[in-house]
Length: 426
Image (cartoon, rainbow, N blue to C red; front, top):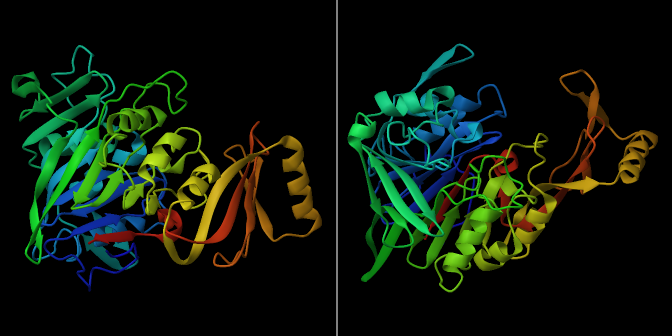
């Protein structure tokens, strides 16, 4: 078993036939990962960002995806994605589909970087409103942002599209073929607890090892008390299981407590998602909407990836309670910085800001879009050693927050801090 690590696969193609490679890309406030399967097929899960970390971030992301260590590996399904799994239609999960799948040129200084379009064979997606009148005629009705649907309908040579419903009381696979309207629509019941995206066998010596990439939840209904959104699209997120032998990874999109409850009730008496090798934390590590106690205690991940922008303060992700819950089960790792948001009382917030001023902490005042001081941001922090609050956010909001940072020696990592992360198993 190999560990998560930041490596340059442009010069070091670490994937080998018979193994899984999962690349979690640093998308700023967004989500994208690319799985290379034991037989060389590539599966991409989500492809979006609402806020990139740097001006040249997309060229860097494209370079990693197109490198000879990922989709252009000579022993893989070269330059092609067998399946694109769109967990749900939030902007930070779909805005870069046209740019990455469709190909784009970037001006970096005096250099022009050009990337070819990527063929996509099959698309899997969720739709939180399958009961709408035009459902059969418009499969990607809610995926129009940034030309996502247009790219997949007309430019990516997609052969099949599937809307996956795997929830309590309903297991249906909706299918479309070109021209992706009601003339190419069919549906069928799903006879198990998963939809297989791709699967096969490989060998360790003379031992045959089964592997799979499967979807195990989709279109789960938002339950009362789920605070994740207003229309249920987050709860409807597709959840993907990656398995090779006894090693498993769970990739959750913006799954919420509703989704987690479905997973817990469906699989708690089995070993399917018990004590997983790797978890992509649901909903960017939110403590409010996901990472519920029953779910965390079932999956007990050895390693955790949180896809989140560094110092993200629109939604205050990740939550420190979620980070702490995952730390409890994670394996040891080299020391690295970790952050998490907590809420503060008004008096506590006032005391903290007054103390920063009195102690002459090196910070700057960050303004909101109305040019009001919104937060204090500490400067000159040594991420490998510093422990304490690095942002105080609450001057223009009723709820007060602090972003707490510390060095961590557990395998719980954030893309915004640790950048692109590669994971290999075995």
